[in-house]
Length: 130
Image (cartoon, rainbow, N blue to C red; front, side):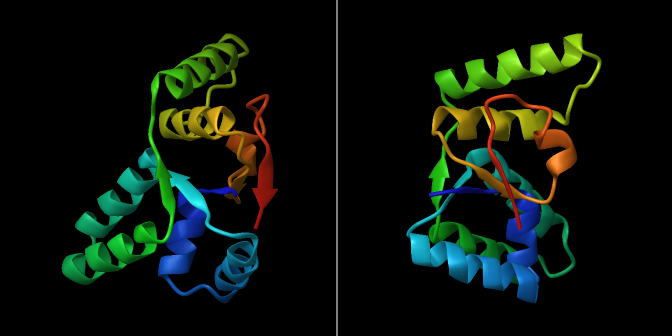
């Protein structure tokens, strides 16, 4: 199982052929996951869009296929530690990305993303570029 990042999920929703090919490959491995933070980002974009009703429905459909992992205490601690370390080095990342990383680390899942710039700064996190 892998943790699918928002950039990948948005590409799926937009019908990107490369993302769809990667999703077929991941589907062969079994059920995949994302985080509650990614779900927030997906719904936020859908509710901001011009085609709100359609995009919200498509977001629900996509997320129903995935295990949506929560931000629990252990995940929050992982994220807090990573964020503090990055800040002390003068290399902070986007707040939501560190929460996603904390959840992924707790669940020992690689993050499927193209956002290598931010995620690669976080130790203990495995990244799978799509």
